[in-house]
Length: 150
Image 1 (cartoon, rainbow, N blue to C red):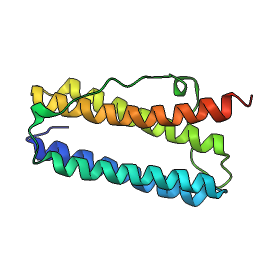
Image 2: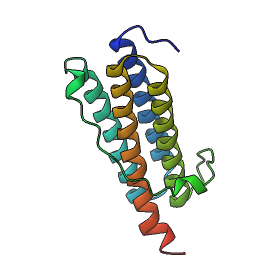
Image 3: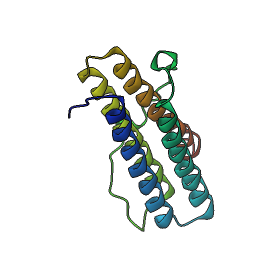
Image 4: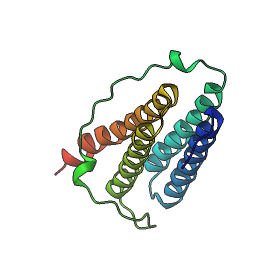
């Protein structure tokens, strides 16, 4: 996958974020309870926010981008991804969302390792950080609401 310029990277990332929006919409359709639907709607909105951030990066100096360190609870490391179905439990929805964010994080880290430009590398690491933030969000919910119940 070759990137000729910053816009190629941003277009790729925007496409991935749009796929995430569709993913969370699909999960909303499968969720049984209004609290689940609300959480998934909020996540859809976060992904839409990422699209806006990416579009704005086109007009930002890459050297000004900061990459925060995001804690990793590693909960998703021990969970198995399953395909979304209409019979998904709340736990299944959380696992699916964690795995989606984990996959996106790994993709951006991998892409960062494949580009020569320090600016593009920084951009991919910023995107990876954003996905890690979402994964942490789900891991905290899972830890607080699922693991404490068992």
